[in-house]
Amino acid sequence: MRQGKVWLVGAGPGDPGLFTIKGKYLIEHADVVVYDRLVGAGILSMIPPAVQTINVGKNAGCHPVGQEEINQILLREAQQGKRVVRLKGGDPFIFGRGGEELELLAKHGVPFEVVPGISAAAAVPAYAGIPVTHREYCSSLHIITAHRKRGDDSLPDFETLAKLHGTLIFFMGVSSLPEICAGLIRAGMAEQTPAAVIENGTTARQRNIVSDLKRLPERAVQAGVQSPALILVGEVCGLSSQFSWAEFRPLHGCRVLVTRPRERVSSLAEKLSALGAEVVLLPSISTKLLLEGNEALSNAIKSLPGYRWVVFTSAAGAEGFFKGLRRFGIDSRNLPFLQFAAIGPATAKAVLQFGGILCDYLPEEYTGKALGEGLAKVCRPDEKLLIPRSKIGTDELLEPLRQAGLSFTDVPIYDTLSEPLPNIPVTPQDIFAFTSASTVRGVTERLSKEQYQGMTALCIGEQTAREAQEHGMKTIQAEKATIDSMIEALLKTYQKEERN
Image (cartoon, rainbow, N blue to C red; front, side, top):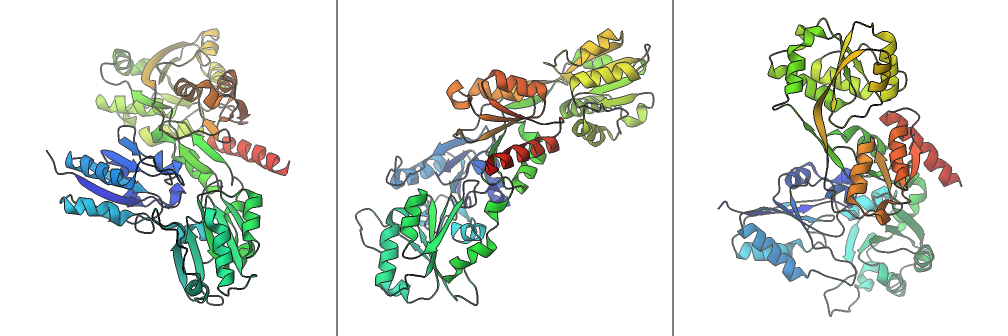
């Protein structure tokens, strides 16, 4: 049996963009990931489906999996020869009890590594526009936990903290906020000292409540602030009104569940994140190329000189076709007699990427029906079309070709499979992003009706929107069947709702 090993990995404060490159690599190559409640959903969604996950999350006042049991889980899994990633919110050594988890491993000779994470102490204030140090206001930073070991009811040393004249950051202190503020005031800190409580920092749900030391507890109660939240005390908190930025991004407050295949999420996810949305990868389908033993594809490739057009309805179709050609030793130099059509710009980009070929025809409207109607007009009656596409492709494209009397060969080149969804809670405020009707079906087949009915669905086109509506979802439909148009539609709808 191979030697097991544990990696203690900091997941950062919630924004998946703040997860380290090394941390991402490790969860993608782990056998098992043991994770906490404070690990962001966007990071959990990066874990491949084949990796075993163990949730040892703790809520305030409720520890379903005790610390000793967590330590034993890490030891047990590593001793079975597994690559174990212990994924912890923030940094594992800043109030993350990382040292306690390593003690048992060290005692039993289990090898381990520590991968630091961006601490909430640095990231959360930065996202709220609060520089924790500033030459004009303070020269020190102090990080304190308001949560003690079980049975220890002592409070922080307020007398010392009040004399430091630095920025104070309290972890795990929401329930003790009145005691913290009162204790600092009793110790001599001015009631007017700027202070803040930041809830769900760096995520789409971030809220920043800024007040003074005396009134902050009341303001927090009025706002209904809950854990997880950081408490900051110090003159730098007053700079938030000048430097706040995260909550002013156009899509701040949106959490979008991207359901397209894992290998094709990057463009949509990156653009949504740049606009302030929290993106969670929830791939509901995957594509499997049908190259081995595909007699229809082999026959079509052998008969290529008899075709005039190759028509692509998706990037997966383009990928499969050109990979199939290479199996026969054929590349674009062998295809001067062919013209190429694509359903839209993203598919045309894939044709260029996989085949090095610029498409000859794209319809004005990026739908299967528009593609079929357009080809019916530009193709001569004697021109034959090859259509490598999904095994479950609809008749939307084919019907206009039939009506025009055109000859075509419809070749299944990939299959669309439903994916098991990551174990991530879906909330009514979340927005599904659907790029095909099959992604809608992938979600509805995996979730109960109560989980998705009434939710908002951002849809790339009419057919996708119709599928979502049939399952009881409210829809936002893109004007054009493109990623950019989807984002424009979301921006218009979200900003309208914000104004109302």
